[in-house]
Image (cartoon, rainbow, N blue to C red; front, side, top):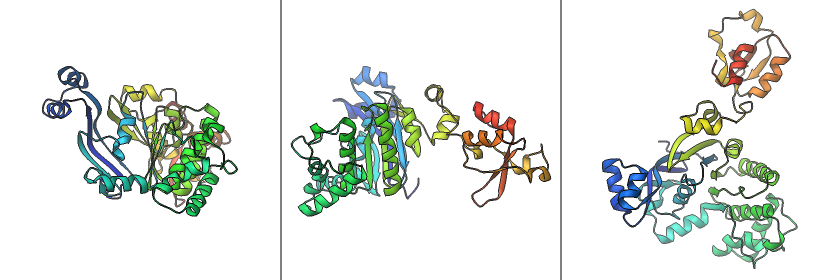
Length: 350
């Protein structure tokens, strides 16, 4: 376990039903399946033995099909749902040990949440919707409007301050929701499929805007999505869920190139690897490279170890020489020749 983790879930279970505690005991003692729990106790397993950590500034994407448990899980982080078993820590605090007042304070100060359906207050202007979290905290009107204006500018909604939600498009309403979440300057953003109801073009624009804001502000984010393309595009790491369980956690590159099982393999089958696989994953270490001697490599083009396949292909087409891969400090650490590059494109390791 990493002591610097902003969010930590350890062995978290949620069983829905009147006999949840009894079912949980039976699960632990007899290792019952989801179907067995439903048949014997009439209870439904929402999430099962989920454990993960999220580091500061990370965008941690949780991906799965409908009913996989991803939305249930994210609502445990701010305790909108109480777990049946397990431990949850946020910013070093035991969330399950907080009393009602402490929990309200954490939600108001440390945690911001953005939903698919923003539930903007229809009788309030855009400015007042964004400022609402600060009003709850008792901030002065001048302070609320100052922060609201700054947040609206961050999401490119300046000029719409006095409009009402009904006067905005769906994409603009989502940006109001994001601005509202940012207004309280939370340490953590919890985003539950915030862009899934939008048209593809608007969705991509909001993804770009969110990634830019995340990089600028350094917010730690748990981002729920059912779209693997979206998860790969914005995620630092991805957790894939099935039937309430996390089946794999990894970087986009790891998920695509090293699927944990057939379920994940089916998900990533149609994903292009050209922007997701990098030189360090397919290169032959310099000491092992036998095809050329050092004198030949001296005239070879160089590329950083973080160069993606797409760029490596461009470099390779312009030369007959192998590509020498360099580390962050400029040292030669590996070699990629054309056969190695082709194996990388096919998805295999060198």
